[in-house]
Amino acid sequence: MAIIINENTNVVVQGITGNQGKFHTRQMLAYGTKIVGGTSPGKGGQEVEGVPVFDNVYAAMEQVRVDASVLFIPAPFAKDAAFEAITAGIKVLVIVTEHIPVHDEMDIIDLASRKGTTVVGPNTFGIVSSGKCKIGIPPNQFFVPGSIGVVARSGTLTYEIVGNLTANGFGQTTVVGLGGDRVVGLSFVDVLEKFEKDPETQAVVLVGEIGGNAEEEASLFIKKMTKPVVAYIAGKSAPPGKRMGHAGAIIERGKGTFNAKVEALTAAGASVATLPFEVPELLREKLK
Image 1 (tube, rainbow, N blue to C red):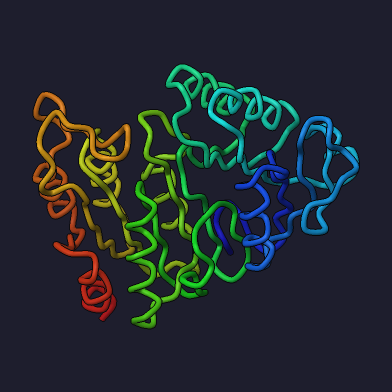
Image 2: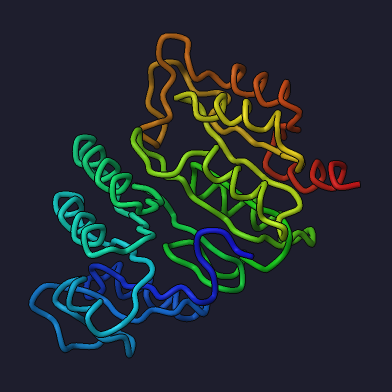
């Protein structure tokens, strides 16, 4: 019972003929993802890595069943590509693209919520159903099947933590990257709810960062969860008012601080790791 995607998810790559699109299509196929098509205006009829290219999502959906799409589209054109996927009826949209204007992101999320499309991102590493399907850009070797759900805002940190989990014998059910921008589709709470209901997920790792109040909102839900949660918050030493890597990682008016997040999560019953490599140890204690 995987969440959001599984081994039967058919994926289209929007922007498949670009360098990023080609490279990550190869990686996703190597992981076992079912990529049934790609899109690139004016390049319909070509192939990339044996995958048929269509002029647009509508043309692809006339030929094949499509459940999910991943965007490797430059920021100025990402909104149009997202709208195309959503209006075509795709139910899961993974937006890897960085630097999409905030107003465009708001429009994308608004349309998606009205059409019932789940948006992962923008500015996300993607989503991995371990051993079944990978949509996005994470390195293949870290993600192995198991019983730990992971939800995160940051990419590289997630690879480090998932790598540590795998090295310590903790495989994963699903790893979800919410995205690092101010406006994103899925929230921590959305994903925690899914993990709480998923019979295969025994415990959850939450990888947060300073800025915003997403972790504080998550802690309110964690209080009600039956499954143990281990968290790690990035940005402990970041100075206030300075944006750290992600558009959402900025402390403003005393809100979104490292300490506030750690306090809220601890009060909710989560164990908070001080360093990424402590996560497996804390999980082991929680699962005793």
